[in-house]
Image 1: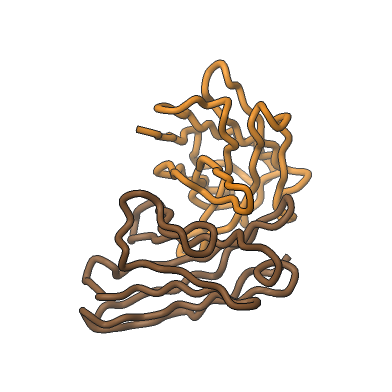
Image 2: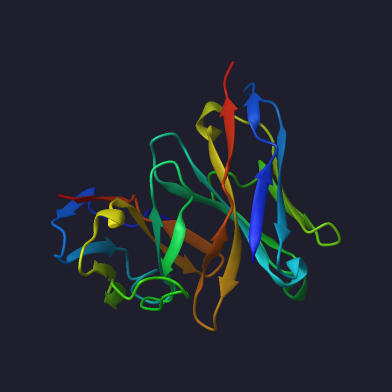
Length: 123
Length: 109
């Protein structure tokens, strides 16, 4: 069974950095693109970014709201994707979900979701 | 990139059918078939229920169906059940970018 599990969330002060991890199991990790989606308390879903699979060069794309501050990377040998978050502000407070990002010839979507990890940015 | 537009809430009685709309622009929904829908129960992670406009993943009830016309995608739930009460989100993926709708709260009366 395909599964992803996030970790690394917690309480952090504005301006500081935090790294989230997403561990995959039940699938060949290097074959899948991985995505991050966040959800602020009581709000809707917001795309953060994704990183392509090894076949597609492991390049990443980001939402405008996090571009330049957040970096997604991956370690296929450990089946882990990372979300490095720098210069955090209170607007970054959210549950962060990791997903497997699947594509057909004409469409891409989140196939499996983790349980999420809460990041709280506050002084 | 602007968020896709969904109604904030819809409601229906058990056994009825409801439709949730998702409106984009000619640059996203109007061009691409990369539309997906997600169901989220309170306190839970979202779950994929429709991908590529009208395809269901294995295990998702055939009471859920999707469609698209022009810049608007739709999710229809037929034979409404109490367990369908949840938040529903549409999402579109264009070249190197994706966007979600604001979400629709479905209440089963």
